[in-house]
Length: 312
Image 1 (tube, one colour):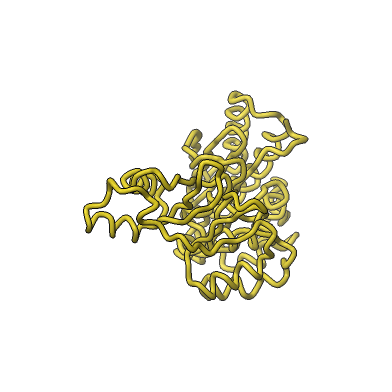
Image 2 (cartoon, rainbow, N blue to C red):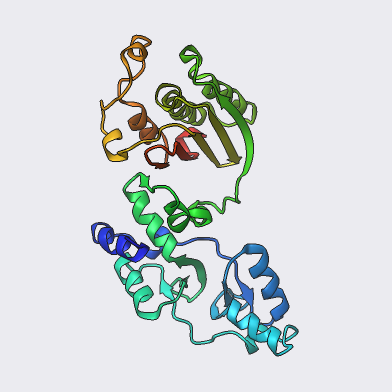
């Protein structure tokens, strides 16, 4: 199933979603009186393939793409104003357009992105197929993406849906999980909790992250028969936690997600683990959870946490 098939299959269930609900915002724009060389640098540093062009009031005037920059390079026009190179008759999306109408535009025009405008034609965001797809999957509360298909479906683009203009996150914390001593399960989660508190994250927010991380760490110890690793990446309003191992993997994620399902052996249950609630608790605590696994290829659990108003 490709991305278009996936979107078609699930988007009718979320027909109430509007463009403003899943667009990337704020959006990088450029003015029509700036030079093509400036657009080229923005496209390069932001690793994007197109930029909305706006006037001083922020109203949409056009769009400039990598193809336009290539044309400028070929014709020695990098010193030209963007107004000379941009596409002026831009197909855009209004903030109140429903998700099914936005998807129809992708099908009709074949573009990779659309600027989103308000009632005054001011650019307030941009929407790609990935934004649309991630919005739908987030509504389902968990992303099931397997093996190498992760790069196709999420990859770097997943960060385009993070609110409040969060920057691409950087690694801040790492802990090696030793599966050989079950009594040590949870040590990494405890260390992460101490680390986040030292970074002045609020206690209620940290507690939610620690619970989810504890469950993921315990799963590595109980099920993987392999060492694992916890990594955390932080920003002021956002924390991402990745817990991975190189063990036997999960053969059926959907089954593993059911409350009470467990493959833990009896000796593990004697320690009080293996009740089959680990993945369920992780899902409840995380704002977004991605599980990547297949039989024999280990497990990667990626959890995203945003600070809620009642956690400040």
